[in-house]
Length: 208
Image (cartoon, rainbow, N blue to C red; front, side, top):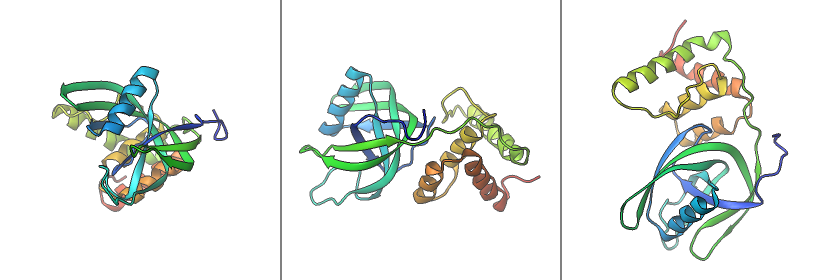
């Protein structure tokens, strides 16, 4: 599907203080009525919702809360739901497609709906030879985290894919949300990985 391909005419947004990447895992605790209704509808229809990073405002609706969020986001697919407590849902979601919104409207319950268009999916390209140290460092990080019973990435691990490697590093790096947003919005996965590689080398995380 190309960047010009049509997205759903309108879908719901979930503004968060995080940047979701395609292929990324997202854990959510949902308790507001608008989002409980949204999750029920998504499960019933087999649909998802758009995650956008907040520039201003809070995740929980409050009176007079001026909310602004980034123009690009990523669709989230609900993979698992836990309703252990009454009125609270714990979700396990996975990022799928990137999108940009062109127009917004807000329902009376506070739920944001967006007119959208898909952004181009990353081409599957192998990491350049100069990026192999960064690929190996990620593989090592995954192994270390697994030994600590931490698995922050969804399988399968695609260490032979530049976009996948770049996205997983972006999730780990201690950089600002604004920087993560810019990296997520880049259409060139090889360039995204190159920028990540430069960051890691500047800080001595990888060499050679």
